Structure formats: C-alpha cells, structure tokens
Image (cartoon, rainbow, N blue to C red):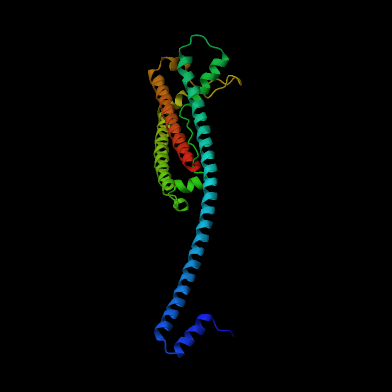
Length: 240
C-alpha cells in the first residue's frame, strides 16, 4: 500500500532527528484534516438550509392559498349577514304601510324569520388554522413573518370573540322578546300566521327589539370587515 506524501516526509524527518520540522508537518496535516471536516460540515449545513428554505417557500405558497380561501369565507359570511340585515330592515318599513299586498307580507315574514340569525366566518383553513393556533415553528426562519402571524392571531381571535358575543345577544333578544312575534304562516300556502299584525304595528317593544337586532348585525359586519383587513395585510406580507 502506497504511503501518503505527508507520512513519508514525517518518517524521513523523524529518522534524521529533525524533530521540530517533523512536528510542523504533523501539525500541518492535522490542520488540513480539521479544515476538511469543517468544510464538510459547512457543506452539509448549506444543504440542510437549502432544503429548509425550499420547504419554507412551499409552505408560504400554500399559506397564501389558505389565506385567500379564508378571505373568501369571511366575504361569504358577510354577504349572508347583509342578507339578514336587508330582510330585518324591511320590518319597520312594512309596519308603517297602511296598504300592502301578498309580496309585501311575504317580505315582512321573511324579515321576522331572520330575526336573531347570524353567521360566523370559517377562518381556520389548512395551514392558516395552524398559525392561528399559535404554531409558528414552520415560519420561524422569517422573524418579520412570525411577528405578523402573531399579530394576525391576536386580531382574528379578538374579532371572532366579539362576533360570538354579538351573535349570542341577537339570539337572546329573539328568544326572550320575539319568539311569540315570529312568522309561522305562509301566504303562498294559505297558512295563517300565528301573530297579531295590528299588535306588532302598535308595539314599541317589538320595534325596539327589531332595531336592536339590526344594529347588532351592523356591528358584526364591522367585525367581518376588520377580519378581512387583517387577512389582507397578512397576505401582502406573504407576497413580499
């Protein structure tokens, strides 16, 4: 087996009694080995970092898609709430009418059936749901994005809590004050409703309850807008 050049030189120097030169070559060989190991470790670290970056970019792309889905979900929920508000807002208009037809009465009863209804947006979508649960390890390599994710979590949680409280208030108003006012008839099917229209027209309590529900719906719509704004700001950060 052939000897390495360094080993041959060391053997020659050692045999000739040149100890200092022998030690110099030995130290040099050790240094080269150490440098080689360090380069190998650096290369391995670079490869691992490159893999982590690729995984991070894939994660961010999927996260962008999930945020867009969440925005669409909130906009859908907001549209439903706007539909409830439109139906409810017709009630006081109808009560002021002295003459009405079957279409007017149908619209009025649709408003009665919408009292107390609400819709909570679905935001915990895919990877976005993980972030909103506080699992930010997958984006920890980007401190700015991590901070934005924490801010988003706080904003979403606060607005959803507010929506829950307002929705519960709407249900309570409907349950405690309006159940006996609800429309349970049908003009189309000739089923008489179980309410006294003349009483509703003269009841200040009924009008106040309807007004309270309409205001509550408007407040929920504002919370929906705040959620959409927070999601869009986070999406902008992901796209940069």
